[in-house]
Image (cartoon, rainbow, N blue to C red; front, top):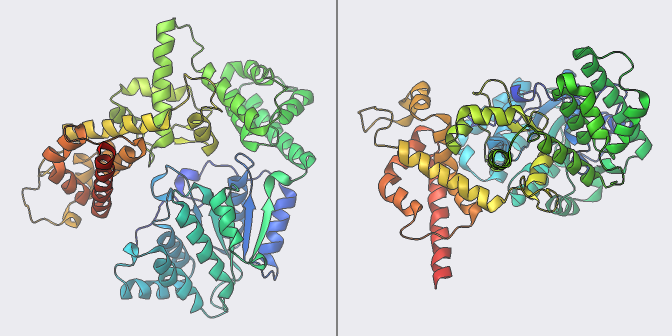
Length: 522
């Protein structure tokens, strides 16, 4: 069975509350996408690019939903940095192949044949996976065996961690043009970052259509954002029993102007206002009081983030309490921002060695920027990647209490992972008492009981956090002590959670770090 990224599809359970475009909004861009998708256009790739917060993912979900309902969506992959399997390209091809197989019996047969002929395909290079699992099965189809054109949606390509993988994916997607029996059209979104611009420059101009989202007429964007705000604020008004007439048109237009073309500003402001509950009207006034002389979109977004963070520490605290609260917020948000996979609140608390109730309270005050379910067993995630960018950029996060020093944060998480593993890893951790037992024979429930989510995370990612911290290793440090006492325990744990290959790569990475440290000391 192919390993897949279960949260990659547009309609995966973790995206069920993510919005679609409201009626009568994004009319022009959706019209252009439909014309490209439905008519005989030689350009097989549509690149929707735009700065952070311009609504790319919402459009991508809308497109995916529309063609899914027409039974013309072949597959979708929504990248998300820090989202585990959707943060990198390792399972990209396998995930696309599985979705294609689910949508076409003919494709399923050819893909299954490819898996049977290449049993180790999941561990092969990205290009080989694409050729065997996607391109060749599509090329074997008869013209009438699948709806055509078939749409593939790839959202947030810039969120893929490896820049070389991004450019390779673009090269592979370009090959869609050579398919004869079926037309595969690829709709992809991203920020206009250098690796992606460079990748598209390598593709012939007649192979792709580009649409720059933030170049749309300001009046059209203002109209769409105003409609969005009316819809959201009317829901808030009804939810909290606020009399009709709130907010008035003038305040809606002022709020829309404050968004400076960023849908994420409008969405974040509405979440902040909604979280005020009985004080929703006061929070709207607070947002509208921000500095109206600031016009740059990114600066406007930074302002709303600062407002939300400052409001989370605006209670009746003395100086010492406020300092400790800010430190806890910084550590909590910094960890969430740089995690390589999402974690539930309970697991995050255990990893950070903090009381669960403290972490829960911090998260409870930050629903405007975080998706933090009531259940402490469901993963926490940032509502938008722009908040991560804000936290990690000292120039943007001008309040030093909230700025996250990325290297220091990675170092702290590496230490937390080591602490957790040293305290919990041991020989025969699942108490199997049978050294020759295959990992696949151990029940999943037993593994999860003996290796809870936080410990699995620590085993899988501690080396990556160590690398990102850029610390110098030495023979008397915590890493050396851990490897001396727990190397075999760690490898056993990795095998039980089916991550042995990641362990091999981690050891190679540690070796390279040791070599760099040796050079540094010389």
